[in-house]
Image (cartoon, rainbow, N blue to C red; front, side, top):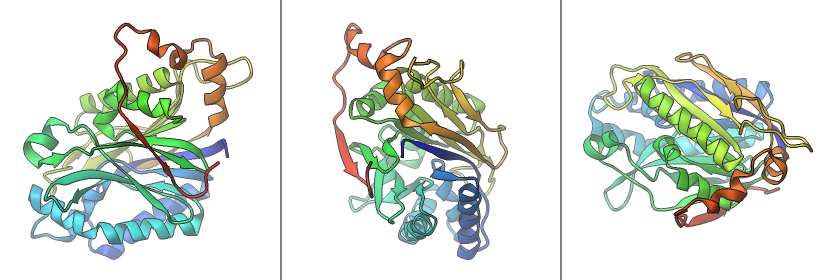
Length: 306
């Protein structure tokens, strides 16, 4: 399925009354995207932090909120798996802090296939807030996922600002990069957006950014959320097809508004641009003086591949 519709969420953080409210909210969001024809649904970084509101005793505490959300992850993942199966779609769940057996917490994004299979990408590079105040630890492996939609990779928020991560995924065949994000200022949003568009240019690929939006004063982790969802490609064209908008912006949401943003993408255009584009940034990457060795990549089959 080289051609499909992707939905990028501008996802508001809500204070939830109970688990049923969360389940109803997520189900409604999925149903809306499916009704619009989406085959891939992308939720943002730390969107799962709204689940901390289910425990009023700890929701205002950074460490306590991690424990609350981490404890709910098996239930959250089971819900996403059911929705992916019920509607026949791929879903990148909102990332969440996961407390691991070594006592450390990692920021985990989980990708679900239509058969309910799941694979995980941990954020690799931590922001200052994550390192110095929240004590989130980076993951240890970059993964590329073989799916029925093509080869996908996930660079979570700050990870998108580091070109060698995306380049390693591109070298492993990634055609679409998913960038779930959570930023509390427009400066942060633009850093991730510009990083995403730069990665689309360098990798001659599609990049899908999904942010949290709105205010959640009750949460010390995600109290302010700024951003707009965007779906980007390289600003280029190939004679055999694969032309992109001149600015590379396929779709862009209204900043701060809870909504889905949609675009139909064709991974065959990625292959065409990498062979016949006006520029060949993928092929010419190694001509840079001092081009660095790339991080190792783990290839993960997820559901039925192409």
